Length: 200
Figure 1: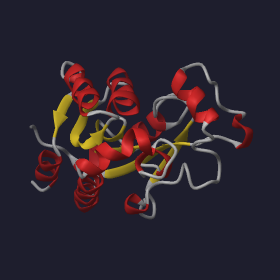
Figure 2: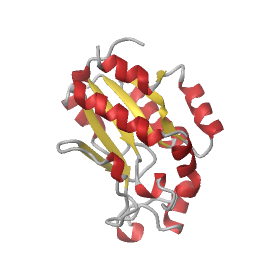
Figure 3: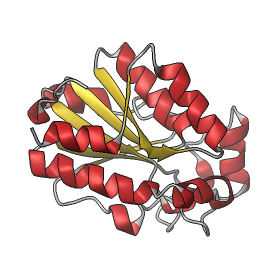
Figure 4: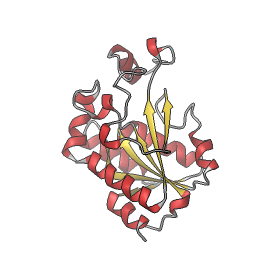
């Protein structure tokens, strides 16, 4: 892969939240198995350490809703499930970021209520304000929030990379299909690729 300029690169971590990636979380039965089997949290830790050491920007995206779900528009089955199962609610443990992936001081955490990280947030403005040209994505689920946010990043004009082994989906097949459909839009890389690029 080509080189990365850390000062113009943001590593964006999507939905590393208790309700999503932990076995006991509301959506754990969907996603935790793949996260654990592939050691995805450890890959993400490695990715973030390399980004921080190189001076790249590290940003965290999470979903959370107000009490009573007054800010949730349940117009698709996934968001209907959120409300039915009382997931990702306000100040509860559910929307909190996993302990292993706690942000460091000064790292931005952006909260959204739709399906992707750009919609209804100031993510684009934050990136442009920091002079970011390249965005590197990790997260869950590859075929939903990760790919969706990555596609938005392409539309916004960013060079866009998805770190294949630092993402996961409900099934390995869904994960791979999401990566395959993104190849004409951006770059599919590994954690090792990014760590190597940041260390040059």
